[in-house]
Length: 292
Image (cartoon, rainbow, N blue to C red):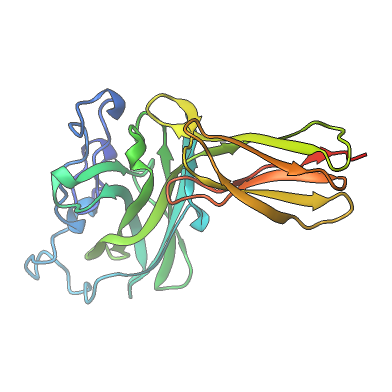
């Protein structure tokens, strides 16, 4: 019978030990995961190189991982204080079926080098919940929880994370793992405001459109201005359903936006930010201006 190592003291190719204290209070990467060894250790089975007596004759092949979906295929976006739990599903197959799966999300260059991994999260569960698709294939589900100041203890962790995955055969005699099966983006939540004034305004007069683009700072637990970012000013006539881009301006050193346009007809003004690899897109609701 296999023995699944607990998250707190796990060892294995993908099993990353849980942080003992909030990383924001740690000395750099002192509390980050240790270097893993093999998928066999995750599931408590004999290693692939073991003798035939250690691995039963039923182990004719290793499991095949065909699909891993993190957070429904969407980016993982975190604000300043609230934690976020995301789901991960692993689809794998083996002649004897699949009995368990393991996933770790990590940030860095090389999983086998302690100095190059600066972020990681491990599952909330000790074992995955696997549902059979057919006699050889199962989809196994796990959840992960991110929290600013804990798993996300510095802003530079925003961006691309790697997805490490392992699967255990149904007869529990073989396992397979991939240290970087796929990628997922972890982003700092964004906010964007708009205010078009004055309202009402006489036709031909100047309308000033102000706003601010900000994003979560995981180190200070506050939102701060996102500087030097292009933002589109868009307009929609009162009886229209379509917005048109009027101009693109950049945020200033504090994330603020300000531009002017001439009043012509009634309509709605909004700002639209396309997003970056570390920060999601955001489009404001339209601010109506009555032109008389």
